[in-house]
Picture 1 (cartoon, rainbow, N blue to C red):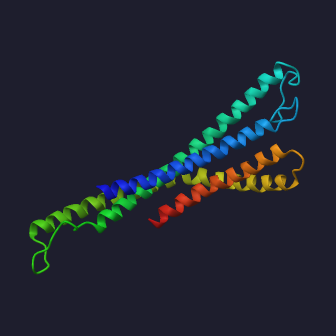
Picture 2 (cartoon, rainbow, N blue to C red):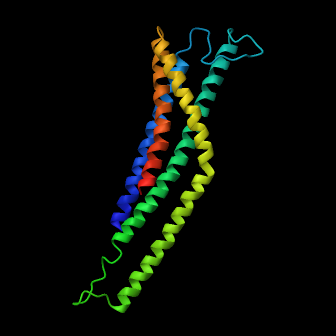
Picture 3 (cartoon, rainbow, N blue to C red):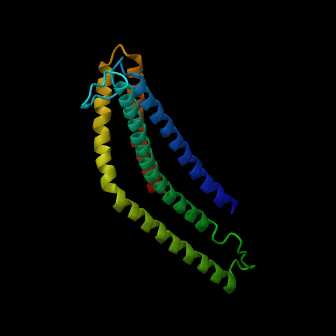
Length: 208
């Protein structure tokens, strides 16, 4: 039980750390965008049916844009970490099944001839049956995840690749505004980390 709990804690700690890092990168990026706006300029270019350069329209629009950026960014973090967390859960289930298979007969001591008694064999077969059933359930959960998220994740990968390339190009040409330069750098790091999360969790699942 202790080993199983340790295995579970390891996966949980890893996903929580990744979520925290992703959350921090996102917060720094949005805060950088909010702080990089020039005087009387909004963080994002947009058309409004009123003059946004005058007070209090400018302040209200500025707060609206920054608030919308934070909400959209955190929703994106929540969606990404939800999917990768589900993948990590499947990985943890498979790891626990492997552990159960390795310790299947750990407490079943054979007789002097090295043979299990009929009762011990019955116990071993019963445990093996449970492991096989749980393995099938884990595979079904993995297949369901693939059916639900493979197409959206593929589309997101394509969009993320374009964003990473465009941001890297803009970052190379950016001069003068250090806050803007920093926010673009953290945004590039953020998008790269997003792709890394899916690749890492998918690779770990395939290894299990």
